[in-house]
Length: 127
Image (tube, rainbow, N blue to C red):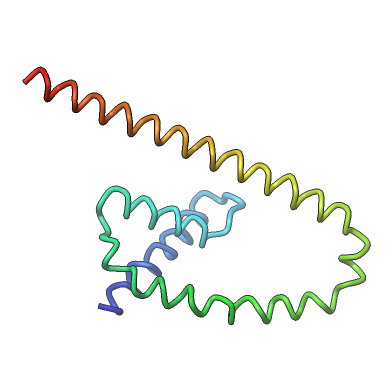
């Protein structure tokens, strides 16, 4: 079961690598892999039960992967301090952009879901 989940998750990451290699887009392949996995889950190609256990385990150990990167940043505090205003501005703008896009996407999906549900109710009442 874990091997299957491992193959699914890292297979999607590999497909992301292939996609980036073919298109040359300046995006992280792991992000494309997550989008592929999300799409596969939404379409039903991959069942949530197949990857949920391994995904939870990977998330539990995510901190161990982030801490070394954070510690190595300490070596470059002088560089960071020089561009602190730019970093704060970019972080603020990108955070606001993510919030707006996420909320608008949610609103659009909810509207589409309600419209589809009302369409089904209308069809059932006519039957």
